[in-house]
Amino acid sequence: MTKGSNFIKDDTIQDDTIQDDTVQDDTIQDETIQEDTQKPLHIVILDSSDSYTYNIPLCLLSPCTVIPSTTPLSSIISLNPDAIIIGPGPGSVMVPSDVGSLHSVLDHFCGDYLFSLNGGDQGFTVPTFHLDSGGPTGPNRPDGSGGYHDRYHYMGSGRRYSGDASDVVDSGTRSSWSGEARGEFGGGLVGYFSYEYGRRCFDGDGGDAGDGGRWMEVEEWFVFDKLEGKGWACGGGEGAGRLLEDLKEETDFDGGEDANWRLSKSKEEYIADIVSAKELITTGNTYEICLTNELRRSLPEGVKAADIYECLRRINPAPYGAYMDFGDLQVCCSSPERFLRIKEGGKMESKPIKGTRKRSADPVKDEEARGDLVSSSKDRAENLMIVDLVRADFGRSCRRESVAVPKFIAVESYATVHQLVSTIRGEIKEGSRTSDAIKGCYPGGSMTGAPKKRTMGYIREFEGRDRGVYSGSIGWVSRGEVDLNICIRTAVVEGGEVKIGCGGAITVKSEEVEEWEEAMVKGNVVRKAVE
View 1 (cartoon, rainbow, N blue to C red):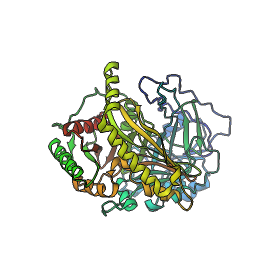
View 2 (spheres, rainbow, N blue to C red; view 1 turned 90 degrees about the vertical axis):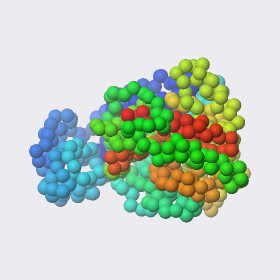
View 3 (cartoon, one colour; view 1 turned 135 degrees about the vertical axis):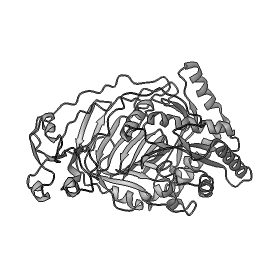
View 4 (tube, rainbow, N blue to C red; view 1 turned 90 degrees about the horizontal axis):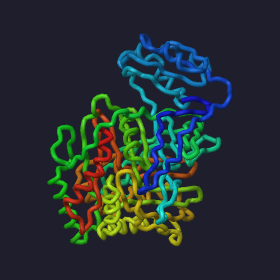
């Protein structure tokens, strides 16, 4: 990561404007960012023996010093580098002479880390991230729903956060970054809360919450403003990966037999769970249950997690997407749903989604799907119940008179689906903290159902597995502010496997086969990016 740089041009970032029905802002261009005149950086390149390190200076304009990767840390520090590049392998973490000083270099210079060209297995990773920040910046539709463009992209790396998930909010407010913030993120913590973290927050089913999530401490990052075609280095940054050049033909998966994909619940098992869930609802034990399934397969040969994310952004752009790489786990998210935004002064907002229809390339059929969603009493009932649940969650930490619903059951249209979205707002009351507000609302009601505590227990019985990142929340904590999504439309890469969660809310009006098909539609969006 470079230090002190205030320019960047990244050709891997595409202008993925979120579609709002027929509205698409084609005027936004990826303009070249101008380079300020300044003193060249002094770059130190660590050369692993028997590599192509000496090709790297040919690609750089700044002065470079190439030294062996076995050089003692004290000698590297004495060079006072502005940036460090770790050269290619080969190598193995099991061979000390291959690793050299690289671990100690990363420990010491992590905040100033530029990038790695590691071609071997040298056993270290600096956590990296890419966050989209959504908001209504495009032209409005006649019905006032507005356009959606992910204006700001934040990219960078950070140190692993070693604290407990419960302390994330308080720790994230203490960013040491004192410069001008571009966009909304101003340094702090980036990461995710797992769905199981909700067992601590809400005591839903008493199960083990595990580590509660993973976070990284970020003090240097890149900001891209796609609306104005500009970028800033708030200390530095690192790209999230290359684009997937050849997209395979899109095909639908209906949950039947497939040589590559496996399901945690077969179609028959999932439908049986829906029937059982409706019985619980009929007898008054719960009102709505969010049941989920999991698609799983081995990572396709030659495909990396960053490839999946870039492809996902291309075919399913969404305002609350994210990419995170923790070394042993990568998260590729294209979420359209905001869980919680808390701004300075304690102003809170949540935008739960309930109700989905697949979009069509045929304009007539597409409008029919939209109309069917708007008129569906079942989908409107789902959304209403979650709105009431979120209002109740807000009531734990907000002034009662401040809780309002300025947008109720409105259609928002994205590249692949139409969805029903409501907006709930409130203001944190005196005596409550930002961390109290998050715990009072977590996990998002759209991924549990209502009432939350009892329904979380039923979910654990039905699903018999931890959801992990999926159904949790990805985002940032910075200077007392918070922005968290609902982690849906997500691929998780871990241990050579790809996992995709998908599901939907079950009410007394749910049709079993339709619920199954809706879950598969949601999973297909991400599955196509993997393939």
